[in-house]
Image (cartoon, rainbow, N blue to C red; front, top):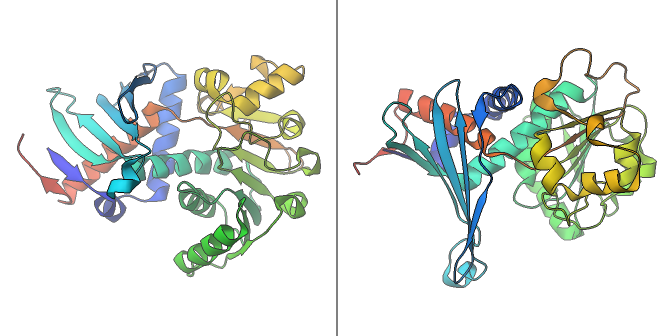
Length: 324
């Protein structure tokens, strides 16, 4: 069995690799070439354990991500949300790899947004707004920069000091690019000028004014993943001329902002399509189109991404091998 930590993964795998794997995973999902059982949650004494399995027929990759939520862990110096990914050998069913599930989640969540932004945002997009500066935010910013030559990124958080610190950290990380990163106290100040808006929060209220959206904007809803979370405003969803999701089953059962838009307006399931089904007729047609992508995540993204990481790590002799 191969053990891979975050450093091992970053050594052999890039955000561009992850974006390509996201496309593969969601295309296979939409074509019925995957098996993705419902997430299983088991409540324990001190927290909750979530089990997310999936199988990809194309490369016979099977795996399960285990994410635990144990709020008291920080008191003993451990992360509150530990996560690990287990891959199984497609020929024998034995465990082939154990890897850092926290970084894997950040990587594939950023990548799926990067895929949508690449497919739907204007080719000449230069300005972006990132709302939310938590654990997923860095990968979201990196994904946008990977697919578009952005020159300005505004970042916003409920805590301005945190947004400012994040902006400084990201400016240093991407100092070799030409992008300028600036924290703003109110995202609505820059919504009208943003070519791309990416939201990665767990907010139960919309995080910007959808009435301010201008023609040509691409919107990503990444953070809200339960029926009670509503980060995207209804106005933004209804204004969009192209509305895509990672998986219809997942979004229509878990995405509170999309469910709220359907409840409040005449929108129906038929007004949304899976990104794995997009073709030239369902992509942006003009620079005036408003496009939208919503993701709640899927275990198939974890499995396809993890399988490529494992294959690359083996070829480059990265990681620690152990005998079970």
